[in-house]
Length: 247
Image (cartoon, rainbow, N blue to C red; front, top):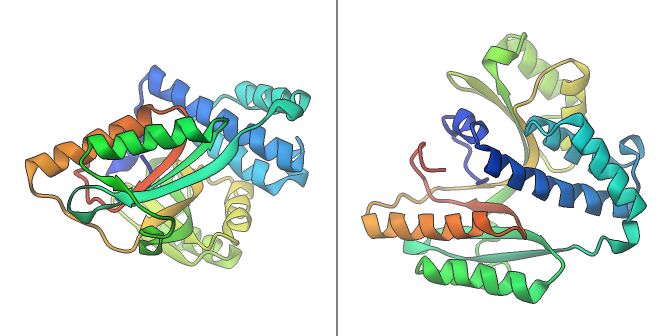
């Protein structure tokens, strides 16, 4: 799940089983298809596609799989009928949840999302009801073990390229950008040979909600699990201050 900026999750998120990886690749494939339809199959002339390719690589999607997805989308562009939809709502104790989906059947997706909220004792709200609690940011995570640069050098590289903020934790660096500056900063790091563990535009909560009641924790986890199982759902953002071993 996206939406949590705590660094302790990073390695956990990358240690996914094959089934989870397959699901991620399927979702990335949809994003690639939509980007190709909107801007063509050449990443050098399609900045959105270039960013998605970088995101795919950070998720360990093989180059041949990426290339195959681009070629398939380019050859079948008239049959790419995915539509972007988003939903906002509330989980237990007022936790805020945003769901982004790419779907070829909005009625199916809406029903599935509503079901996930309902089974977790939450409810879907109106557009805008919780999105104001999140900031849209470019977020780049770098594993210290894989990065050959020290903190000062990396920070100056990022800031010179247009980054807003640079953070350091025990095992990783985090670079934040505006949505508009994300591509330029990511490309600057890529050109400098900096390996990126994650690189994407995301939504970061302005504040976090801590859940203490076991039932609340169980219910929000049920909602998140159901959303994660839905093939239409691309991203889920929330402001639950989840334990590091949960997400």
